[in-house]
Image (cartoon, one colour):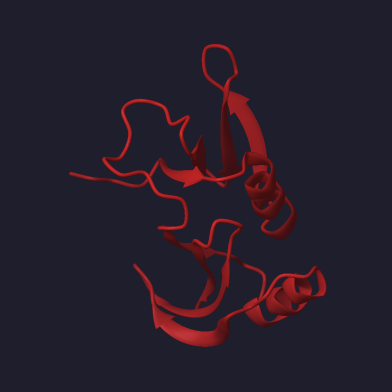
Length: 127
């Protein structure tokens, strides 16, 4: 029945800090959308992350939208050891990895860091 994930939503404390992290550290593109271009999404590949600022969420929303409650895994073709070095050079803190994990379709070699809200971000190569 379910074919793929189209988008997910993150509730965030600070839109500018979140956009800067996902754009500058992870290479996503921020785009405005909606009737009056009042909403913001982070695009990557054929997916996107819609952003809801805490206290200004769009309806419908999660029952208890909370910044920092996400745990996301992104796949990359860039070797994660090289990505880890690049991210650390840019001031990002790698909290774990590279380590092997299980993914949806394959084994993964992963690194972990946190976004400005404390969401756990896993970036992985399929191995």
